Image 1: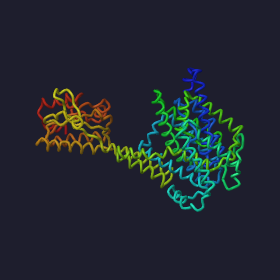
Image 2: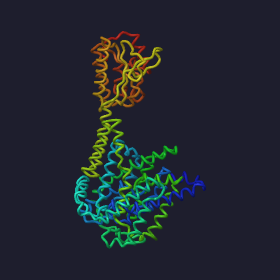
Image 3: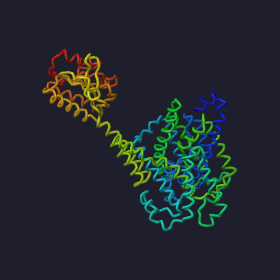
Image 4: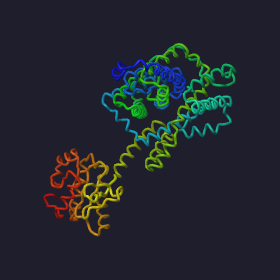
Length: 564
């Protein structure tokens, strides 16, 4: 437990800053957690229930000193997408199923942490995750529009829902629209001009006061309604093993997306404050937090950028700020939860839309378009997957696109032709260093990728193309090809076969092949497969210079039949 490491060294001077940070996050999380409860499809009080044990669990087990783990619009939307079909199929209570999902996610996190599966955060390539997050932000925002304008939510994907809301403008409740738009405007103005002010709490208090003062609930304005003070749990009944099995795909989706998002935030703060986080420890901490949320019948949780940023801006130093949040939310549940009875649904929708507006950042996609076209289209594909197919199918699309991106990059390796300086002491890429010169009669190429099944054909084609270009340029074939393997950190059986195929192919043209700077793991695989003997120990060199000198000092000869 990381708390054992940092708590004994805690400085008394930090306490005031941590308390201030905790109070700041409390002012933000109370209205937001209730708003996200609507996204998760449960009554607002269960958003509060998700907080106390979750944040305390992360404070004890988390490896980040700045990350805030708690209710998130992302996992709230994922939770609703997972639970809704099961509710329809079984008729079980949505609160119980949502809490059960949080427990299942927590168990999966802990198992993953114990098995050291922190690498699952890489299931989403960064460009694909960017596109998915933008799409998820649009999905959540559009899902809140009916509450913002006072109409019933329709079925269908995000695009159809948006068209339905806009097309039903004649049915909008203009009192609801006024409250919602005013709430949204206040939130954006405060965020822009007074970012340290807890806008969600301010707009909630103002909306409650105005609603009560003008009795707006009797004029058609939808409000949250009675909220019990204290914990009001639903009996844990109606959950079957079949329902739990049906939850597993959604639970895995929450784990992958929630963990990728949370770890990215934690890594950013770790880099800022110059310490390291442990992804496997983070999985354990997220697991404890999710179980804590589920135990109090809340929805699952993950890392939150907005609340982490609020705590950091307020000067928070350690997870003691999380303990303050836990205590304050507990007091809110026990003493003042009923105050939020007159909170307009439109204001809650505005809080959600304002919170996810930061996710809808199309500048990320524009940056991808400017930097790398393939990355851009994969991000657009992930975005479209969410908007057209829904969240869970969108995650499958995202994972598949990440694998496509991975394979594409392996299948299109960078192959550089190297030249040397006048002193013949250094070699470099001729495209990057035009002052270097190609070695007469010797073609030196560097393969900047692992040589495996995904790019074995690309390796063969690249070497053949380089030889052909050298022949066109010099008017004759090179006598030797030196393959620099410094950037090749892995080779598999298919890669070895491709390497031997190139050697045989060039041998037929009277060109010998020499390998330079092959790392120990590469040499070990070549030895185990018998390829090292075929290549010849005298054709494996520690440096490029040694390979070139060896080629210069010997005449290019066809390989013997034994080598073939």
